[in-house]
Length: 107
Length: 123
Image (cartoon, rainbow over all chains, first blue to last red):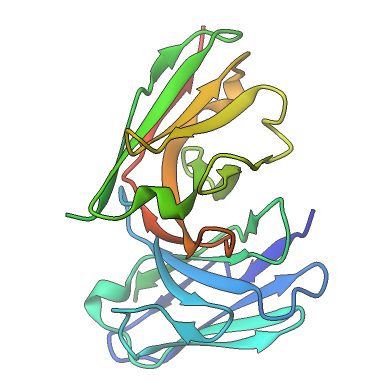
């Protein structure tokens, strides 16, 4: 199975800050990497697919980059509604696997 | 309204069975592959199973293979997960999720999720 490792596991930031979250795959997955946002008690929602493509309806403050084994999710200017947990997920092969999540909290 | 609504969760003893359902509405259910994804309390997401748009191909995560069966009824716009020989470690919220691709062009990523149904396996 492909292991997905996110860093950091948690971070605190303020509204307006620029934030980056990292995701590393245990083997090359090309650009088969996706990012989700999950708020407490809610289902996840797709933010970025294929490493860098913004899902319809997602604000342009979100962006993704990377290929191979190393990927980054960037939020250019935090809004209050962005405080949530973020997961990366590889769609290169089954079993589909997720990172352990990064909890983004308010400083 | 485009949505997925799960049902069938509850408390069950180890070794017993449970069947989950996911009712789809607002889109052409029969055009999409569908997944089950679970999340144990306080834990990360875990992919459980996938079924092709027409039900002809299925795939499972290693921890459930041989115990869980995914199926669908396109005439009823409903996805199912039959869970047999349940274990304590199967305790989780189970979400159904739509694959972002259509028909044979599945993408193994999830563009629509249901709110989930809780399954608790305990004696």
